[in-house]
Image (cartoon, rainbow, N blue to C red; front, side, top):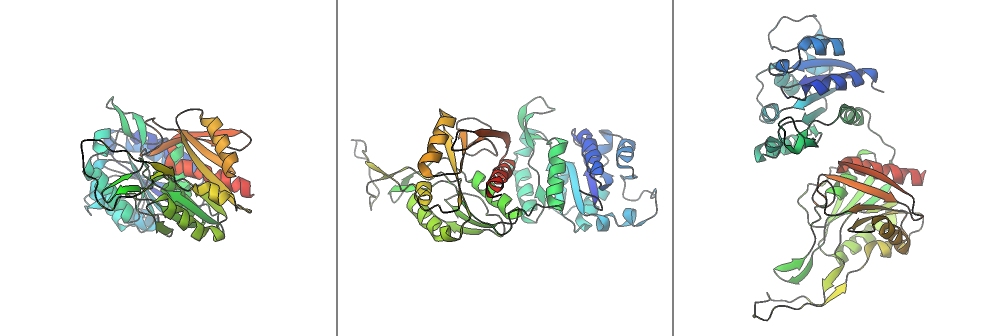
Length: 397
């Protein structure tokens, strides 16, 4: 699969450096040529000779050391790279790369490299969530760097949190997806809804829900990467839409339905990942409602059911729904599929730390109208999105 590709692997001084040995071994089994660059601190974790043995190539550590073989790979490593992988990437090297500091061979060569770059952060949880690190990662994303989100779990420091280097198979999978992207959805128009809606009470108050839109935006990014034409109808969220996606920003459930109906005639697939509000106040006050000491009573009516409306005129389209449930997850998902004429429902239990609203990960049951189902996760939402699209592709044939 990777025959003919050269991958430069930058290893930094994180405790997870030993995992990179398995990453390199798996890349070579797929046919890739691997060249390793280590920082000085990385050599304190794993000896360079070990990486040299696994990669079957000399390892570069110091900027001005005498080359072990005199060829273009050493003097212009950046030019031969088809992908530059930094695994693990410490907070230190992430900061250097983003801020243009090139004071060793790794940071110098990656700055000179024009090939795709994949950064795999791995560090203490508190370091990873530090706003400075998050700013640097966000900046690298904007510059076109690929960032593989770390896993959550028990870390070397003994605490549990986000910051673990993903397992080698996942790193290799990401490398493959960058170098050999899947284009199996080309020619398909996919309509995706994401985020919450807001139903206003008065000019300063509304009812909504905790949806952040992460699942819908992950689906849009994954579908676009696989070649689909993507229409994203988004409620109010704090996310940047994926490049190349047609976006319509909405606020209320009625606006979301109207936007969906606008795109619907062209859609081959609809994925309703949004969490539109089910109820709205009977009337919206034109002025801010003041406290009176008597409390406040509101009367609500149901908002339009977006997927049920689309399901009435389904035609040959594939319709996918989401169900965030607190009980009877599978039974409720089957009922939802039948009532709304859906082809499948992605159901998950809310209230758990590793899935649902606001989480970077998710765990779902993909439920069919006949009650059959498959389980996926917990995993990053992008991986869950890929699994959902695989299922959609299998229904299309």
